[in-house]
Image: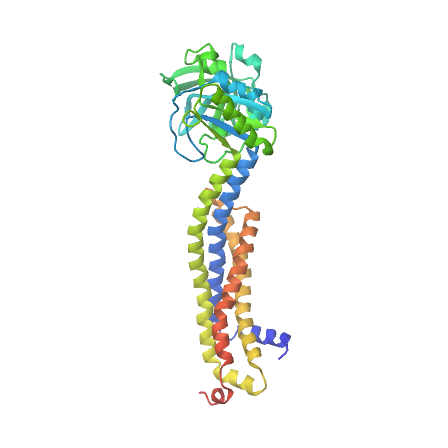
Length: 419
């Protein structure tokens, strides 16, 4: 039997029992949709956080007071990190920029909480900030009579719930709270907006969203805690930018040696976290998630493939006499095998095509109701389908192989006498 004739013959056969074959196609459609959603969400979220690390500046390091890791527990330091010591990191040969960070407390806007963080002008470089309007902090702001702030994207775009202009003064209630200096009573302050930042990716596992922050200079923020001499001030850590990604390990070692030389214990007083650590953390978390998703996907795949197996077994029984007729007319066992495999292939192909289109539509609809579905971009769907579709097709053929093989073992003489 010629290949083209076998393909056409098998395609005509799938319309002989429309209800049964429609149920098989439906099972495959559901497998594609579920695979696209479940695996797509995992891949989408992983891609989002991986891209967030890259966007955050792949040559960045975070020096943190105390012992911690990305997404890990925190142990307070025995010796606090001094602002002057953190500023000296900038003098290291392979460091592009470095800025101490001091978290001074929060502003509350209903359910939204934003932070006030003090930093040096180098933060715009070390944290890879991009300005939407205005300017970032500079040396002149330290001695200014006004309280300068640069607003993170979320703050000026939606949290303040109104249009914010550069040069504007905003009266706010501030709640001073520091893990170093403790908590104080809320105070009223007037901040002067000098810049608005563009949206910036959040580094996974590092807590504070950089888009929900008021940034100001260190002098003004320490005055809230009655500290006027920064040589006596301490900070939670620093953001450091290496000259290149290749220099990350060398810079990390240089910072470690510098702080140790200033009397800090690397085992208890500070941690150095790079973007590499963030990527390792992401891969570790999603390795566990992928293991769980693989179990779910195996069950979905098995259900879809079993439907093909059951229908093909029933089809072989119903067409027992027809198979005998084909064999008696000269069809070889290979021809019978191909006929049933082609029928399974047609059912799979139709289900995969309809399922792919339906999956795209379902995902777009779900994006209107579930925030996490928005992580599934079109490219993520294509990447997911590149895995899901071949697996469903091959599994369907594999499960169809047994009934197709049984069909080839039918004796023509017995089949022709079959009622």
